[in-house]
Amino acid sequence: MDPTAAKYIGAGLAMTGLIGAGAGLGILFGNYLQAAIRNPAAAAGERTYLFLGMALAETMGLFGFVMGLLILFSK
Amino acid sequence: MAAIEPMEQFLIHKVVDFPLIPVPVLGHIDLSITNSVLFMLIAAGLLCLFFVAAAKRELVPGRMQAVAEMLYGMVDNVLTGGIIGDRGRPFLPIVFTLFMLIAILNLLGLTPGGFTVTSQLAITGTLAVMTFLIVLAVGFARNGLGFFKLFWPAGMHPAMSAFLMIIELISFLIRPFTLALRLFGNMLGGHVVVYIFAAFVVNLAIFGLNGFGLNTLGLLGSGLSFAMVLALTALDLVIAIIQAFVWAALTCVYLNEVVNLDHGH
Image (cartoon, rainbow over all chains, first blue to last red; front, side):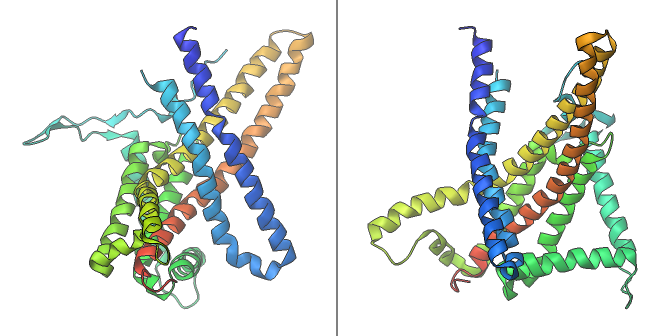
């Protein structure tokens, strides 16, 4: 296979890490919303942890993103 | 067709050129003002102006003072107060500074022609290492060598604790990387996506104007892309604030671990 083509395919494959981040964010916000609708009074207090969880879930996806960049731009 | 070069907006170039300055040990140092430095100076200036305008200490706050007090109260109640507790009060200045600096750098990147300073891994990396070192310094100052209890999960078989200690240690040491990568990735990704859709607007419009028939569909795509650029810019505005908030919140979480080490807050 042409090395350049392999590089692009590899970078594309590295982005599949975002599947997990997307699923994680969906679970996170879905569950938060469910809990918030069941008990609206407690929702505001947990919003900080919602954003923290979002940040942590996102980071896992960004590792894939960085890996893609590394594959794409490394000589 | 206009060329699509999404990474070009992140290139650093010199705005004001200074000659190289010789330094004994390090060799020659280039202290020229680049676009990155320029926008950091603008951000610092804006922040100073904002607080000079806001810090009038009037009993009935004006518009600027109300905004500043709201932000300060938010960081005080939700972050240092909410996460660390009463012992978090001394860390309010550093957390608030980090929050405001990152928020304003992110927002400056969204202005037309603006340069996103936080999309440079060198900048986010420096901020992350700084945050990490502050946590380490506070940990050792508050607990002395008892700081290492942070890595030793109590209440289980020692062999299990030893195994978990390795994992705890790795997850502790990886923190500056995750902090830096999160902000860098979010800013880079957001701007690249907006750029690509903006390039679609121009290229599809040119394609649509080149002929009739199927080509006319290009104009439709151009319009849709323009709507997408608007929507993504709105999303980036939200993300700019949320990422600053997340950075401040994570700083608080890390500080909480070392400040309330013996109290299990």
